[in-house]
Image: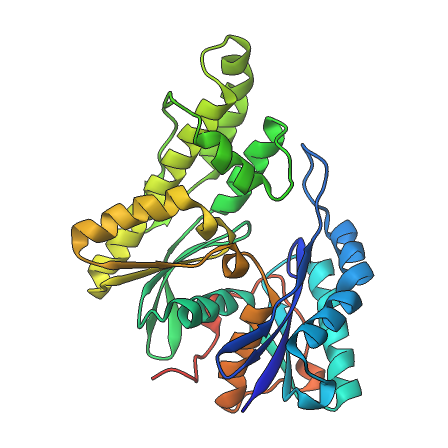
Length: 335
């Protein structure tokens, strides 16, 4: 049996998870929440992570019923993500690995999402839609790489939603995206917004600029409600994502779609993707917020796969990088 502990803290979530041969033994986390209308700054987020990470580590070990001696490898998020939070987590992971005398392993955050999604859903070889606050990619596996078929050319879909939430002063608790989703359910009027798909890629910055400018005027003149704007934004963004995912499926002759990342929790996105999959005779796989949202277990699971295939990270190479593409990683654990 191989036990791997994973440390995740690339954005405003800090989590420590423990996985043993495909079984999630523990997965506690904390979230740094800012006031409505505000985002989270890297330095303040890192300060939050430093204040709670040892408590979360203790919780993970206690919940799993394990001691440091039971752990075989220490995995941490190498990137991509926000610099200061990544450094905080890497420092703790490096320290723990040396104190416990365990090998260290730097994990790509995106691949952590994919491997956790594959584990939980048991999807075989899906076309992956990875959607979060920092990333938007359509991915398929081929020849030891997770190949990126399409992606955002500017901001991520989650960032677009989060920034619009700030415009209309939506609460960040538990997350702005979740609160937009709830408001969208009450929307009844569709407001036409720019729809920007460029081949296999998407662009969200123009949509955001348009709705940021239009929101104040339309709300002031009672042309629509905030709920209508949330509904319209979701419908437009998610339609774009379904379109490029379907195109990737056709290219790969794929009959499976796996949605991962924090925005993947959105039930409306899952519903729209489900309609497309049903029309194609394909299967949709998704997880709930326990595993869609950033967590330590996903880093542990990717680390478990990497460690079992013979990979480790030397201490001298255990740095972090804010830009770390999914297709940079050689996938040594898949055929």
